Image (cartoon, rainbow, N blue to C red; front, side, top):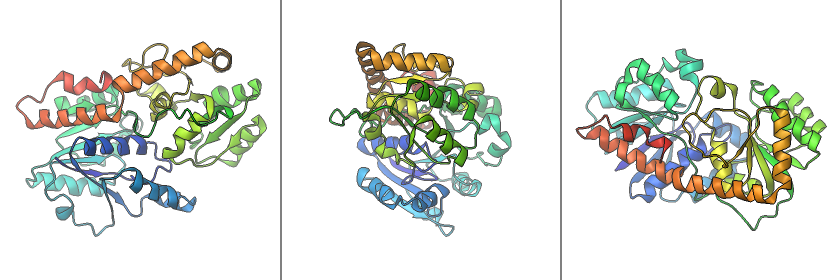
Length: 376
């Protein structure tokens, strides 16, 4: 197939947690023998912010790290007829502008033969449905929803069997253990502070346990306010700034544990959807302790990570990981096995090919294809 993918950003991961998976499944589509062309806007906010943070080299790295994938930047003058010429599959990610979504959809309406899919990796269908309503999806053949709960929302919106559960996953070509990296820290956390919507959770599950355990810790991310940075300094946590996603494996390899602190919209409104950091951490072989979230789809077996219901339990769990080598080793083994057997970008690329075949074939209602993201 000729696969044409429209992303808000492919070369940049600045405040763009989707970059890992979007890059990873593109890599695997290419490895499966498909032609892959990626379009990203030249003035996308993620890319421009990365450049402002002296990230030009990190952007250039992506071209080298993803050989065989054609990356094309475009502006308002893009000729969509030319861009989509000969395409068999077109995937449009939800961070694209409504105008881009409309213009691609109009090509399908006028008879373009490609299969057109909308990829939704956000909570706006629940938290901001008016934003989703700005997208003209009438011409789309289907929706790729990054969790079963989100698929059910699209079903209620009338998509029926044209919506598929398609979880994120780990790009194991890049995210894997690095045993030669020395572990110089006790804990690392990679994530953005954001707009303060999870300040209380970050204080309870990250800052306070680190301070009380008096361990060596670093955090990486963007959009940290002055108050947040002062909170880090007071707790003795080193702030490392923006960490390009493809550097994360080295950061994970240099620490003995990490934590997962999900954003509240996912906990409250979209149970069953982990963030990409869970996949990353387990793929890199670092013990993970998670703040509360509901693994409603049973993506991960018991033992893949530890759960902490509150800050006291987080501190206790981290201490157990630091002190119990057998526990730590068992968590690493279970996490790695789970990723490799069920949650790699190769699994998801193969599932995507199956979805396209199902849409084009006589039977478009296979529950196995729709739900394979939870069991692949």
